[in-house]
Amino acid sequence: MDFNPKKPNILATGSIDKQVKVWDINNMEKELFRFKYLSGVGFVKWKPNEEEKIFVSSYSGDNSLSIYDSKTIHYPVGLLRGHKDVVTACVFDAEREIVTTASKDGYIICHPSETTFQPMNYCNKFGLAFDLDSTVAFSFPCRKPQPEKNSIRVVSSNFDEE
Image: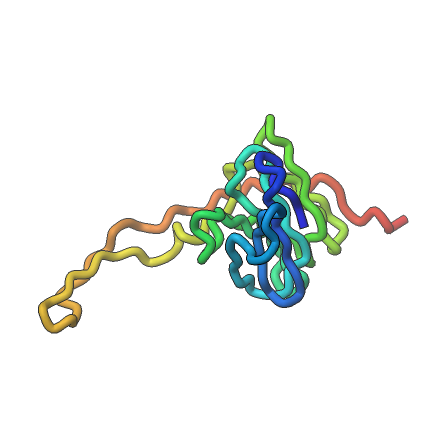
């Protein structure tokens, strides 16, 4: 769980039940909103300089750190990838726009903000036109997917090895 750094009464929680919930601690009767995650939640963390961004780590399965915008909670707006095992922690350097992640794989990775994978850029986007019978009259592509930037930097690895 993590308190929003810009709004100290807002708390984000995540759990093994695959849900991320955001609460106002002044009124804990019902959460402000919630969303389902792909697996049990390892941790949640608010981005310090953007009060709407929530980072979510999977408890198992996914080896990335998902970034959600609390205004559009139905899909991640970004993914930080590169680990071979579960992401266990993240730290922000707001001044340089870098997120550093640690994982059970023994690596620490620095992710400059421009390397964030944005899944929505890879979705097929197209326009549709419907006729009066509610069938598709025609469709057309809107734009091509953007290529992924790949400049992740591994800082250190395998602390336990001698």
